[in-house]
Length: 261
Length: 154
Image (tube, rainbow over all chains, first blue to last red; front, top):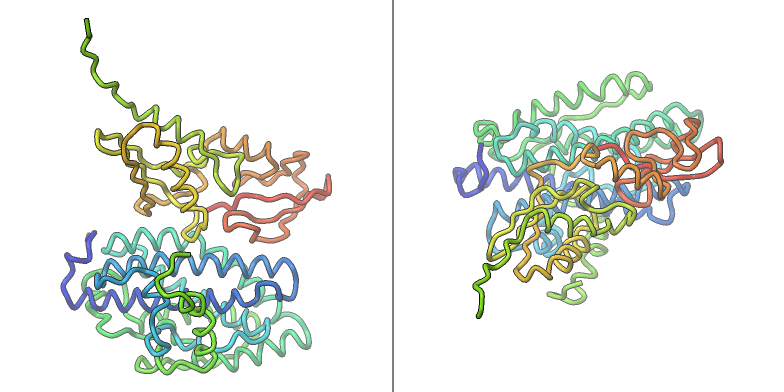
């Protein structure tokens, strides 16, 4: 069991910082993206639900950035890491680069993301890096509600006749090429497995994820081909949609550098 | 004649009862102690350390709670250090019996209680798993036709 990043081997520490950056950026970007529904969701209940989900994700991102700041220890705090990077510096999965789209697209993406994230969190549940294990334990208690909600919505759209199902199918088709990017292998991830920080490599996590969602897709008659992600491009070459979102979420901070809000 | 009087020893229990006067900012009917968020109180000669557990990771009330704790304990005349940690996970099992009663009395269903806080009916429906704050969901009582909120089980 390790309590302090300083006790890790340098290579392990670097790999851990990339894992934390990937997780934090994923939560941050999907949280900001889904907060765009606040005020305009198709019904009041979903306006509240999506806003609450987004708030949870931004909270998780903040806690992960704080942990990352401790691990990297280069003088930047969580806010500096979250906001002060150019577009190219973000390390979220390409699945989250897609524009928010219509309601079906947001549900489809959240379902794909939440199920993959659940596999990743489970693989960290017994992590030897205590601060991460403790945080993951807390995060999983909240994510359980997200997954319940998204599974209910996927079911609802897929089981409906006509437009809802058509929109869901169209969204899944657009997202499919990037669906597996969340769990794509990270650089030097073997050192994390060796140090028992995570219990499996990206390939194994990908297999677990497919085993988890396969029966759901079969039951709902959603025949999807989800290609294996290329680790080299899974978290790079961000889209114009992300470029726009980045402009939105950095606007306030950039308006008055160094201010305390 | 002047008697030598030893400085009074500040007991942890005194600090804890001061903390019990601090209401949760989002649900003022319950104190932060009854909510189960006070994990540790350590009274030292040079500082009072208070370890609190966030109910939800992204709870926006944490800064307000920290400030309320610092303000309430200021009278003890030594620096107050408030920390939030995850080493122990806050769960809804940590809410005390008194806390559960106070929640019901103010119109919130305590975690795991599936009855209406107003009329006691079990004929209630979940309107929304998510509510106005992260820790609450929205329900509707079909008997007294009253919407109400329930504390999510975590």
